[in-house]
Image 1 (cartoon, rainbow, N blue to C red):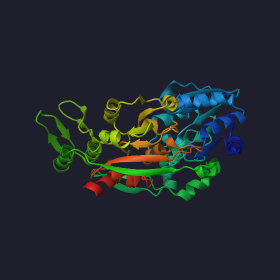
Image 2: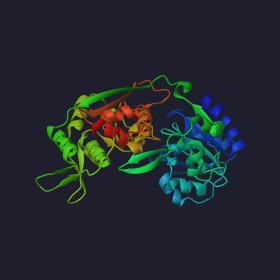
Image 3: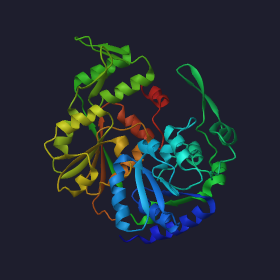
Image 4: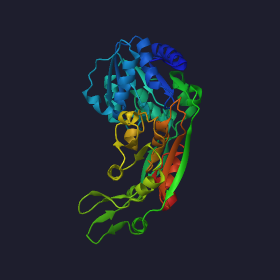
Amino acid sequence: MTLRDYQVRISDEAVEILKEHGLVYLAMEPRTGKTLTSIVTAYKAGAKNVLFVTKKKAIDDIVLQAKDLGYQILLNVVNYEQLHKVKDEYDLVICDEAHSIGAFPMKSNRCEELKRICEDKKIIYLSGTPSPESYSQLYHQFFISSFSPFKKWPTFYKWAHEFVAIKKVMINGQSFNDYKNADHQKVREHCAHLFISFTQEQAGFTSFVDEEIHYVKMMDSTYRLANRLKNDKVVTNADGDKVICETAVKLMQKLHQIYSGTIIIDEPERESRIIDNSKVDYIKERFKYLKKYAIFYKFKQEGLLLKTLFDEPVFDDAMEFERASRGIFISQIVSGREGINLQSAEALIMYNIDFSATSYWQTRARIQTRDKELECKVHWLFSVNGIEDKIHKAVSDKKDYTIRYFKNDFL
């Protein structure tokens, strides 16, 4: 495998930062080759035994890329859910999609596990979106390192009193501290020297994502159910099945499901059901001319709906899809938004949309590569008068769609 000039240049720069500071953050935009760059950096830094932590669906592709490099380096690739099984036996750790470690104010389990594994070890962080919602997401990412630039502040709360304009917010009648408003300039003064940023434009990308929104009319019964829930908060059918939305958060989640054709029954037993095939029917008619495309969905029942109603070959493995001459790749947004390559897809169809701004930006990038000549087309399917359009407006502006937005839009 031949590395691109910029990958060689970035790896050389990263090695110097790694040697001086014990960690480096490759903030390279999606599809610019940060995986290979990180492995090359580890090799040049003299690492012999490397742990590469990533998402489950990305493991096979990373193993193949590393094999193609042919470096004499022992590389163990695991997913974040396997961290509790990992022993303390590595001299360098690569954290892919590192922003996923950045939960705050409480640290996540994966953060705790990585803290144990990474003690006194060099770390290479990888993410195209290091702090997608708030600079506060950086604290726990660096917390796992013995060389954290925020080591002076042993807990997030002590750090926040120095770096965050803490505000009081009311949620369901209770007062909570909001730690999102971190001082960008002050945070960067402590950690900017650890970052190497690189964009798709710098990498020579010539094909960028073009979005198109399709509005789908759902069945009348779908709108009746949604309206009854908005008004009554509880709906009971003739069989005694109940859908209950006693809080605004639950109402937001239920409407999100309903407007794409599924619902979770709350009583007498919790059960997912398909109530409307309109979006699937639209896909089958509108995109029947495509030989290869990918569909991303939000809720599990949507996946079942999609996987059972198409005549074409359906794949849930991205590498098998890439080798096929025709077919449909179907994946849940959260599991497929990172680390997989869908460059042969003629289009990406978003059956539903996630509340997360990170999901929005990373899922779009799945069909991009530097040398792709095909147009990178992303089609969003929104129900007429539904909730998806409102979510899109928030996440495309790099903001998560929260209960505050929902209340303003619908209540």
